[in-house]
Length: 239
Length: 222
Image (cartoon, rainbow over all chains, first blue to last red; front, side, top):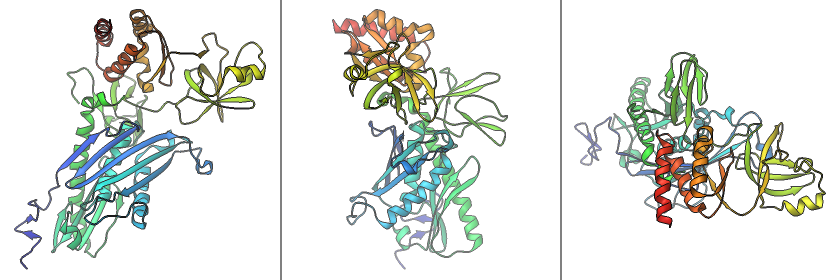
């Protein structure tokens, strides 16, 4: 066993067990949309663009009590090592619907009756936990578009590799690890909006992992907030 | 969140008060008041308001808006006013004097910009052009800003807009929906000024700064 993923508490890319990859964010990357944001964690890059609120077409989808969301998550052809076939796949439809349910909880839909909000999320680079980056980017773009929100959502992943619990799974840890759990989290109300898991683990391990991943989400939340509070620098690009 | 600049920026979900308080741009959950938008916090004893940097226009009765005629569908014109729902201008509300349908269709072809008032909001938004200031906008130039910046462009007692009009010798109409119509030779400068206002609306001493900026721009132009 020479190619161990974790050696003396240090991972392949030199991170500690509970350390996130480098976070980066850019606001208003697209001018023609109501709001847009780029969020990257390590080599995973997501760009979210928000259109609307707008009229609902087709008309039968219209809800006179609240807004309707449309989420399109796509992985661009060059995002993975092997070329990814463009367009929708089973996977992208599943992730779109999962993200939609998360954002429906975050947006105050009752404030915008009879309207539709379109959120397009493109993954420019995929290196594990793309749905987490997608949720983070989307929540920042929604805030910039001036859509009423309960709170910003932050999302982060955790996993188990070689019987060790780690935060923010990346690269080989994702493909060779035992467990991968992405969660989306409301730090304000300590509420979990998304929790998916594959693999087998004990209840104690899960409890420990949840503590770890909540800590990671809080770090991301603080980062999102700090970026948005520095919006004045970016106001020049955006009317 | 610095206070030294004279204003505080808040993000959605920021705790503003531990008791329920009324105000715009906030929501109450479990007897606590939180922010709904990314914007500037305005606190008074009884109210807490958050002025968003950006929000989509929500029509209110009595608002004066600038819209564009999209189509005619008897008995109304469909008007696009950059809000999520379209608005409708009925033939009987176009003018206070009687006009034939043929004549109206000649005058208000699709693509015409109009300045009108919102008369009624029921299942659909109805416009009226019976007020004195209502008119068809011919020539000139359009600019658009976020509806949250409209009060800054008008200024206190219309001081800002009066100043811009006098200095640039243009005629400016501002719709509550954030569409601005400018007519005159210096329209290009006015568009620049409006962009500057919408960028710096939250920093105090706006009128003085804009006044200086305008003078500089006018000198460069000549």
